[in-house]
Amino acid sequence: MQRRAATAFVLLFLLLGVGSYGLIATAQQPQVSFDDPEHRLSAGDQFTVDGRQYTVASLSAQEEGGDHGGSTTVTYSGAVEWTTDSATYTETWGPGDVVTADGFEGTVTVENTTDPDRVTLVEPVDRSAILANDSAADNQTVTRTGEEFVVVTEGDKTRLVPAGEYFPDPETRTFSEDDTVGYAGNQTTVGNVTQSEVPVSWTAPRTNTVELSNKANVTLAGQTFFVYYTSDSEVVLESDYSVYASQTAEMADYTRVENGLWGISILSGVSVVMLIGMAFMPSRY
Image (tube, rainbow, N blue to C red; front, side):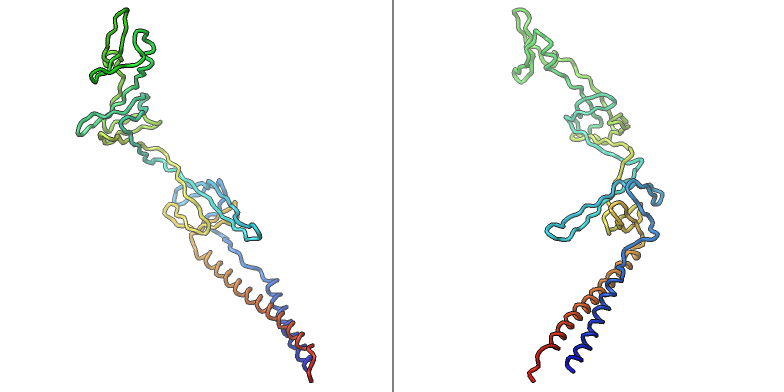
């Protein structure tokens, strides 16, 4: 009777174990999929959101980990770009800076007044070259009683010529506030001049970039999209997050059920082994 009962229970647990394993083997794990997303994109694709055109600048994937039997994780990254036709650019000139405006290169100088309203570019004067080209002049200037001089020797006579008289007056260009000048290839407006800075501004196209992080939100033209990479070369932008949330919930339910079935299979197998062992144990009576 003992062995008959054990055999019956063994068959029962075998049926439970095999049935559980069969369900695990035949069931298909649900995957995240988007049948009709707002945008399904690859690198280089262009798409429009609220009248603004975007371009997928890049899509990539990088594997990390996996050493010594560890699991491998994949990090997805990407970016989209768009162009603003009339973006405002600003820059600040400081006294002593060398800039080129209206084709003239000069050093920035500002008049020493309480409220300056103009900026002057002073052409650099190459004193060394001028002195080198004058055989009568020393190669260096000298200072006497706080004033700079050029030493000029003519015959047996040497005289000191004030540097301000010897060197030619530099060429200058003066711009007032609100003047428009050609600078860095743009029509640039001179702003409010102060003794310490000269702000300038201009309008020109600007390329803007926003990153696409996997399973995160991105805002384009005021609209929010959920970002999901289907592969290293394709990304989906979906405004309805519930599409993704419902599928991940199904995947979580599947995992819980699968874990339960594995538990049944393992416990059934252990029970079968124990019952067989107990059935064939020698009786003391």
